Length: 394
Image (tube, rainbow, N blue to C red; front, top):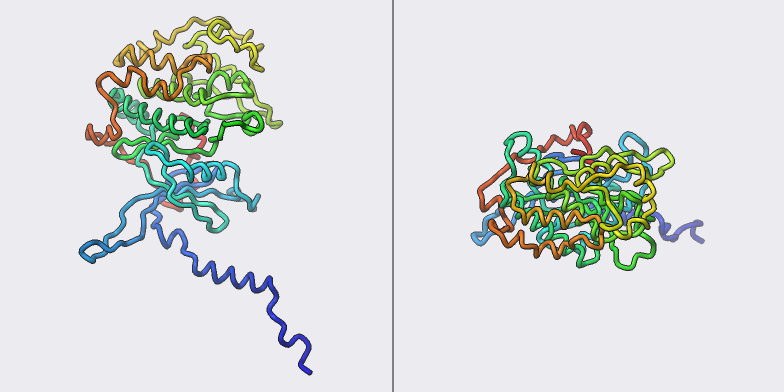
């Protein structure tokens, strides 16, 4: 009789662990495929790095050609800096961004190439862009001290609208449009990025407000959101684009308010200062201009404000005098108070402004032979000293 336990197979859990170890050894790691060139930025989501492919491909001459394509690696962290691991799950923002980017394919939307899970962190590998719109606007304002040429402004706006028409046609709201999220290649091709707050808005099971009580950076937040709307539409993205259009022309944010922060109980504050900045330029909204304004939860707060006239035209001709009256008409249509009367992205794309010379183009920087200082890339070991990118304020 054999000894007790002889012939017994290995425990299933041990076999599973051994299999996992073998699989991990065979799995290629990010650094095997990509050379990390440096750190770009960080935020609540994690970090972004610049990378270059290590792949070498055989050319027609049977020689090895290096793939010199550059990439951005967006790494979502599952832990807090300097703290113990808070969760081993995947953030809602990361899930949204990855799931949407895997489905979306458009010239003016950021291009997701692959997703990798490594060391409990999700990594999005995307095409690299040399600039963002915030960087270009600041360069013109602080260094060149000259406006962005109208051909470039018009081309950027046209591409941004083109990308937004695609998103809205596929029932996606971006909900976080601002210059820092408008990425731009060296040729001048717009890539709308950072879809972490984006949502499908077709037949939602609950009001979008229930999922995210605060959306859009406050300077670009539509008035219906500022007045507490529980239901809102793609018109909020168009308002944000109108603010971005004004900023490109004037080299200054059109509605530069001070954001009231949430209290410890996470109560959504009333943004009185931001609304004041809007009213000072757009005038105080009335029922004639916005018939359904009285249905908004924070409408009673309007009694706290003085009455302002509509000064948009005066603002435009003070800061954007080099642009045509047709540009003013398009801006006015985007910054319409009533979301039901506000121009849609598709209507804006067909506005007469884009039929005037100079006509917009897909690669305006290449056509005009314009280049800007490349974004700063820091050594990896200094990334903790950088300002978070996602919440970038002007």
